[in-house]
Length: 73
Image (cartoon, rainbow, N blue to C red; front, top):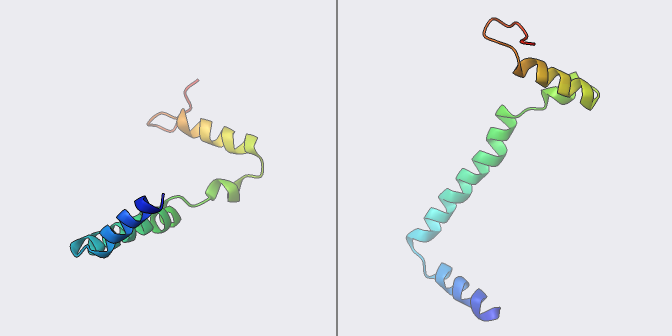
């Protein structure tokens, strides 16, 4: 296990462009998982409804609406 760790640690220490690429990757991951989540995946269902049954009814009704807003049954 120690040999594997040393292999990767030495490889990372000797990288030139790789460190910059890893920094770009980490910044992109931060943007994807934290910034975008806050903007697009807010918790409106938790604010509007108290129970899981109310949440599920709301989602089901919105999924089965047609273009005109009428519920298909």
